[in-house]
Length: 180
Image (tube, rainbow, N blue to C red):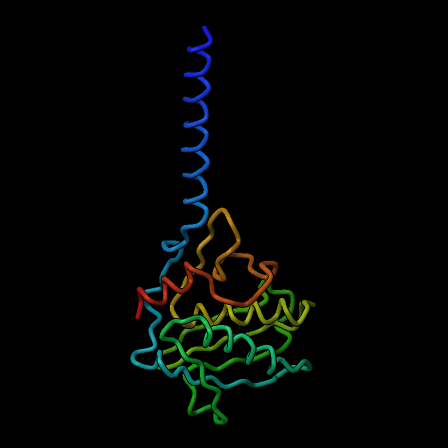
């Protein structure tokens, strides 16, 4: 009887170890946590994404946009965000104004040859949350779509504002590397 209990205990311990190890591996592996927008592409500009910001409303988000660009620059991807002084020299144009109660904090609109990111100052967020929103919208401009997994680790998870930082995560980086 004792031998049987010992064997059953060992089987249970091994089963628990396998289950818990499998869960840890699944929770850590975010390398496939991305979705791409095939119609959005920098067409050779990905190593120098020139961005330009225009404050159309009452709030100045320039530092927020700059911090979001820095988060992408530090991500280890081919993407490099470079601020330019003239709208005509940019491939990413970022605007902020009060777009009203639209249901969105940020929005990406692709155009042929360039894209727009809009930040909606109608909503009240902290500077940290706005930086996350700006980095998220830049992710769309880089060709990443929303990817909603069980955790909120990915920058492209919706809603993204409560994730804690604007840095692209493993899945976001894997998506950029797969696209470019």
